[in-house]
Amino acid sequence: MAVDELQAIIERCQILEEADFRGEDYDLFQVAGQKCLEDGYAAQLLEVIQNVKNKVIIKNMGWNLISPLVRCILAYKKEDEKREHCLKILDQLVQLCNPKELFLGLLEQIEQTSGEQVCQTIMLLLQPLQTVLLKLQNKKAYSVGLSLAIIMNQLTPLPVPYTKQQIQEDKLGLCQCCNAVVDFAKPFVNEVVKNMENSSEFNDTELKEELLKFCMKSLKYPLLTAQLDQLEGIEEHPFRHLAAEIIVSALMPLVFLHHKSRRSYWENQEFEDIEQKNSADSLACLSYLVFVQHFGINCFPMVFSSSYLLQCNMTHIEVWQLFIFPSHLQDLFESCLLRMEDNGLLHQYLEFREFINVPQDLVKVMTLCPIEHLRKKSLSILQLFIDKFEAEGKYTLFRCLLKTSNHAGVEGYIIKNIKDQIHLSLMKAHDNIWFTGHHLISLLDLVLLLPEGAETDLLQNSDRIMASLNLLRYLVIKDCESDNQTGVWTALAKIEKNFLKPLHVGLNMSKAHYEAEIKNKKENGRGFSNTICSLTVSGEKMPAMTTEMQLQVLHSALFTFDLIESVLARVEELIEVKVKAVMDENI
Image 1 (cartoon, rainbow, N blue to C red):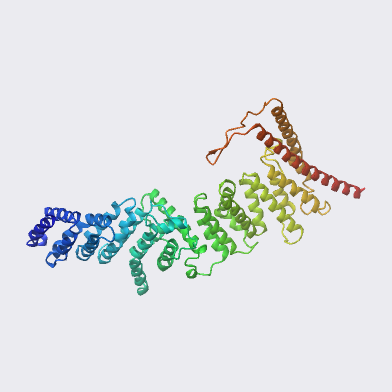
Image 2: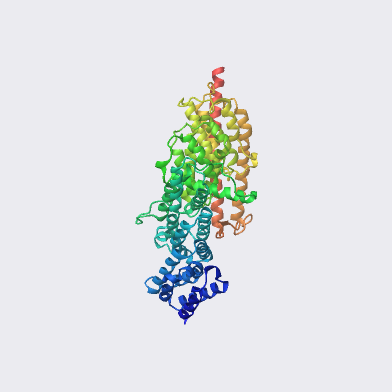
């Protein structure tokens, strides 16, 4: 019987001194104890462990029972009496065993678990592990850091529940486990904070460093990808609770005395770069939690200007990969912009790389993101960003976006913004030199031209061309040749050469081509096959186009050309009328 075998081993070891225990004794004790657990004799094993005479034996050998003990606890149902006996055994081992050996045994179990048992195992062993760590005298900071690192490494591969249903179900136990880990770390945070408060020369920074590493890892996982909006029907949102605990209870107290110039732990530059990237993601998430979700905002110093906060956060916004965290990026960017007054952001901010890169990233979301509401929100945030700059800043930003967007729709939108700024200047609402005179002429050189001359794809660039024609029409109507505030009349010859004449030629060529294609299609089907091309959108192959569908596309193109031609004719008519009027006045 397993209990008899264990008792025999115990009796033999009771007569030995602690220093005389051999490896064979450890092995026999482990085998016999494991067999007792597996055969259902947990109650008898508990009696052996609770026997005061066996205290020295359990102190040295008891940690070997951790592995089979954990397996049995996870295997038994919660209402099973044997499970209760096993839990009491675990509690006794925590009280009696050598802390160093038990610490390694507990960590080994956490590190070896996998799949659906990850959270169950961690939840089971967190309290015993915390108790053991509090007993440790040497290398306490290292042990706490190692424990938190192993726990987070085990949790990180698990998917983060996102929807209300997923959070409520919490199938793998991640929500519950993450908050339990924060509670696990609290005594060590309190210890550091207490020491910092009681001593003006707090030198033991190692434990604080380990706790800060844990906080930063928690920001990256699970908080960076978690749904943090308050959900109806969930009284205490687990990830909002986690965010509050991490920021208010841990980061805020620890971070004020945490020097930025901390040393690097890596001699290998590649490892250091990885650490910096992970820190950047975590800091970006922290910024999002504070300024968008308002966690810990009451603890945040309110002495910084809105433009300074925007500058700091632009670094974080740029960190995030657009198509992984677009909503976080948008919310943080929008939150910072809404704090500012219109026309108050100086043009010098555009000298910072982030102030150029982030609007270009917004353009990518506007043009490439498959999710409609994200595209629309990016457009509204881009307009908000434009509105915050003073005139020179708007002017510089317009030039940049016209050169880099490579999208006719975006270019058309920017040209419309240019028209609005010119209107404000002409109406004297804003006294500025950037949208009149020679500065405006320089900007119009980018607007009033065809990228490839007469051979430009007019259909592809129709949004830009229509916006340019509407701008030119506005300038001709609003700015008299005698005033010439915008300088458009001085540049008229160049505009005709670079824009109007090539556009005429391009329209004639394009209309002739499409009319010929329509004729061929109607007569004998030449020019296009039954399917124009094999088209794939977002990985999905689109259905073949019928002849009727092809003709609809061709007629739609001709309609676009006719529309451009009508506006072009109107512009040229206005120019002719104005020029003739001036000539008549001079006679």
